Structure formats: structure tokens, C-alpha cells
Length: 209
Length: 210
Ligand SMILES: [Zn+2]
Ligand SMILES: [Zn+2]
Image 1: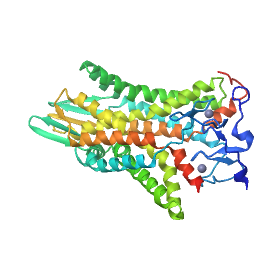
Image 2: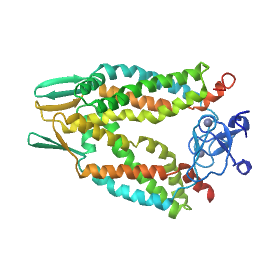
Image 3: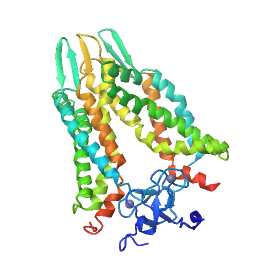
Image 4: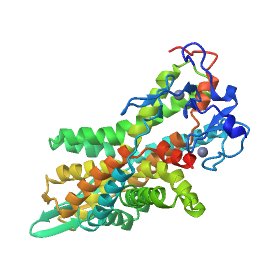
């Protein structure tokens, strides 16, 4: 019975524990903690179908973005190419496997898991939320969402492609490939997906039943 | 609920915000009723963990900056560049914008992160009279900007994979790369494990305004 007596109109700030009374917000506005300016809650707008479309596009681009080279180098008639994974491997091969793992995690594994996780969450919300087994999986996915989202660093990788081009342009000629194009579109899709996704909304789906 | 006059904290209401899903729970509960994770009104041990991670990161900052991070061979000539000399080299090549980006991501951000987190943790541990609002603003900036240090490691991995033409042109990572990767990992962890609610409890009596 305790749970029903809780005053659900109060929110506690995650960062400073301040109690704030919840108010209705206009669309597109975020409520910030008046004391420490941490994000408190968003407008409950999170289009499941819109996210599904973004997710499927991202998933479709994920494979070419990782299997086609993101950069090509032409030097005295010979051509060298690299994919993101080959980049990580070449560092690891030199004995710097911590660096290799960091690159692989931030640019390949975390984005892939993030897309797969959001897709699974959407499918569960749409079709299987009453099934206790899937409900449990859904909770697990939500728990790791924050971590995956933080580990996904596609925007930083995008910038580093350009930095590499400028850095090496002094020595040789560099060209973009299909992989670069797929990667940039993937990066845009994931940015939109993260913008659309609202973790509080996804958690609150569980309360409704 | 007027926050200006009396700041009511969840702790005094007997309520706890679940750190996993932000659900409102009674402090007497052991686990959150929505996500099932353990809840605690405050995680006091997080302060020690955060200090340990931060100190290790600060020590690793020295090898990361003093040892070479890349080895570049061009027409038989070998260059060993530290983070700083690499940026210097870029300035000489008239690539000022790139130099500024790399300077920010590889030198400025890690230093600011370590100094900033250090001040933040000291403010909690020794109850320093520093504005909590400013500390928290700094903390949010650190959380957001910290990941950009990965830029240099991405660039090194791309360059190492592309440039491998033996004596003519060759780029390889060097020992500082691992130290630098660990600095990023440890500082990010130090910020992540910390229960920031501790700051707002301890300084309550002293400098609350500004
Ligand atoms: Zn707050
Ligand atoms: Zn919870």
C-alpha cells in the first residue's frame, strides 16, 4: 500500500536530491532543477513509430558503415584503405590493445548495441509488454541504456576522420569512400534517435499496466 | 514548493530518487519497485571510489604527456611525437584549426577534467566554501566535454591503419597512447561513480546562496 500513498506530483533531483513539484510543460521544453540545473524531466513526447523508422534505417546502414572503408589513401601509386574495425585492430596489433578496445567499443560495439537495444525495446513495447519474460528483458535493456548511450561516440569519430584527412594531406592524397557516406548517415540517424528517445517515458510505460 | 526559501530535500521527506530509473521510492525500501535495482539515500562510499580513480588518472597524466604518443617515419626519418610536440608540429605545418581542436581535446580537456573534479571532490571532503551552483555547472560541463578526449585515439587508429608503407611513410602508436586511454577511462569513471547529492548535504549550513 505504501506505493500508492507516494505523492507522484513530486520529483526528486537525481543530482542534488531537491524536491520539486511537477508542472505541466509546453512541448519541447525541459524542466531543469532550480538549484543545480540538472535535467529533471522532459515533455512526455516520444514517438515510438518515429523511433522505429530511425532504428531500422540506422541498422540498415550499420553494416556498410562498418564493412566499407571510411578513408582511402593514395601514395605513389599504391592504395591503402581502412574500416573502423581495421583501425582498431592495427593499433591492437602493435600491442596497444587498450587503445584498440577503446576505439572498437566507442565506434563499433556500443553504437551497434544501442541500435539493437532500442529496436528490441520498441518491439517489446509494441507487442509483448504483458509477457513477464519480455518485461524482464525490457527492464534490463533500460538499465543499460544510459551506459550504452554514453559509450556511443560516433560524433567524435566523425570529427576525427576530418582531422586525419587534414593531418595526412601534407604527405599524401586522401579520398572518402562509400563507407564514409554510410557512416555519416548512420551518425545522423543515431543523433536523431538519441534526441527522440526519452528514458523517463520508456520507464513510465511500465507503470501504465 | 519554493526552492528559494527552504530547499526541501528528498531525504527529509523520507523519499529517495532511484539512481537507475529516477523513480520516486520510499527511503525504507531496499529496492526500487519499478526497475528492481538497489536504492540508497546516499552512496557515501562513492566519494572514496571517485578519489581513488581521480588520483590514479592524475598520476597517469604524466606518462601520457611525457612519453611519445606516435612514431612517424617519413622517407627514412623517424619522428617521435608527444601530444604536445605533435600539436607544435601541426602549427608549423600551418594547420592551426586542427592544432586547436587537438589541443582542446588532448591537453585542455583532460587537465580541466582532473583539476575540476579535484576541486569538486575537495569541496565535498573538506567542506570548502565554494559556490555549489558553480561547482555543479562545472560538473555538468566536465561530464559533457570529457568524452571528446577520445578524438586523439580515433585519429591515431585511423592513421596507423592507413599509413604503413615501411621506410617511405609509416605511422605507429607509441606508449603514451595506452596511458592516455587510461586517463580518459578513469576520469570518466570518477565522474560517473560519484553520488553528487553528497555535495548538497554537506555544504547546506555554509555557503548556500551563490
Ligand atoms: Zn538538483
Ligand atoms: Zn528504479
